[in-house]
Image (cartoon, rainbow, N blue to C red; front, side, top):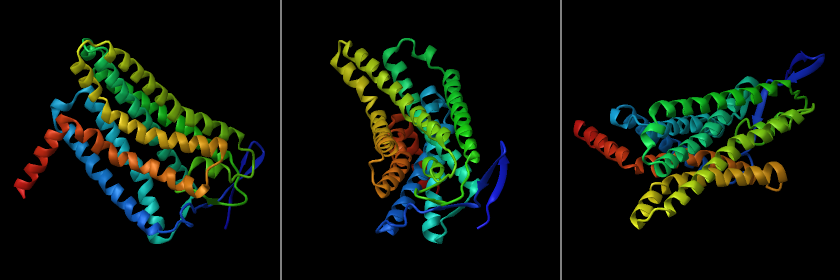
Length: 320
């Protein structure tokens, strides 16, 4: 195998032609798992594309709330498209090699959309916060323009931060193993293969985990503390129940996304007390399942989307 040598600050940097993804080689019943992933990907595409279509072509749904919902749906499609087809290709074609540059591209796309997924859930929490805590000023505070700005800022932030953390991978020299024990070109498993100092990359990964998980999760917690304070100040029991009922689906999404990832990253990255095989399987499930269930639990449970989705399905059946 030939290696590409470049010079950086008078040091020779060795870049391999690519890496071998070996995360699933030791799993029993791996064929069953990949059939399950194919089903998850099909559901992800079907329901998220349905949500995007319904919101895009119904002007009455062009509101701040549904702008946040369609943002989440777009991110869900990209997230699973970035990961699942590559995993299935490894299983079907038996080709687990990924070129060096394509590895960096996959790393960039995955962590960008994972960051955006986390911030999209925080945006939905912001929408609930304004709707419940500031009902009289909701329409003036949470406008389409302000929501577009918030969504645009999160995309710009994610793209910029992940572009930096991915670009510094080119400063690493890989002169020994090129076998990545993960289900894709994962950041930490790749930089740990380097034969030169990767302190900067470890620090970047630590900061990244805080930015992706800690920041949005803290905002969501504080938002719901404020919501609970406001709800328990309401005099009517019906008003309390109605207000809290609008948050149930979002809380499910938050739990499904954050709890597994925070557990895996905390136990695995800092304590290193998790079995590598269990880490790969748990992290792959934690990455692939939320985009699949988000539209089912949240978007299609919303009355406005559900009504128009059912009407669209009926219209399609009549047309055929």
